[in-house]
Length: 322
Image (cartoon, rainbow, N blue to C red; front, side, top):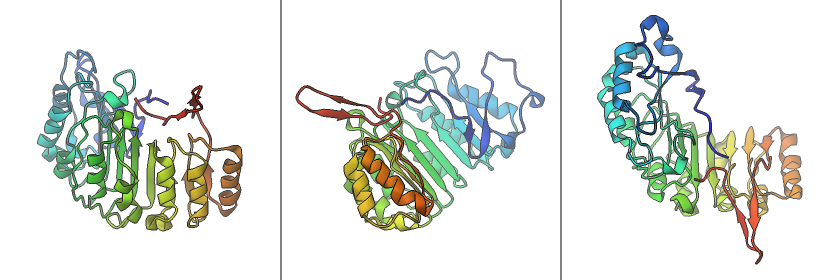
């Protein structure tokens, strides 16, 4: 699986792409009301004639930004070797212009613009510090991602999509105090693309003590999916979850069996395991155990594929890597 499509909805709002510099200067009458959409601001990923900060300045001039509720940062120029530091600086400088901002997504960039593991990232903490009213924050790309431990009082949803999440970023999120966080979605990725965390680094998520409001947990797209599921089988946080997502990774019968043999999962509303390497027998056991209790189980193998070498070595892959 690769990411081919830009976000169409964010923070409960339809996405509207702010016109690029080649279009006629947009007037207020030709634009949607500021609070009715999630505004996507982007430039060409390759050899752009306009810098992202200039596109953002046009946006600030054209829109009543005091009413804007959600922003999406699309491609900036040369995303494959340039960090979003200038983008982040521009956003932070405009914080007083965006008092109603509640949703922010950094790097809504698709494969045709830049593969997820080639997106150069940076330190995103200034954004969370500058916008204490944020309720939803997302970021795509793990190359150079820095996420130090922080505290944010209002954040309810955090999504980090990578083909390989640096262990220091994982540890920073795990050490953060996020008392209002309801949903956490981490794409951990593979060691081939910098995903060097192990299951011990995830222990704070399993305990859940820094995330007292958490009810939706996704630890997915991981090559250590079996170890994650084994830890979740006895993790204290599971008892208060409504949604558990361990999809998109290298999940085999071992991990699924550990989940089934651990603490009860019948209180869940949703268990998502799609893109997996389960046998028919284990897949059937999951469905027969949990669906009668009302759990919506997605155990679809999806497009999970494996390669076997002549010596019997089997290679399995996460859904989103490069």
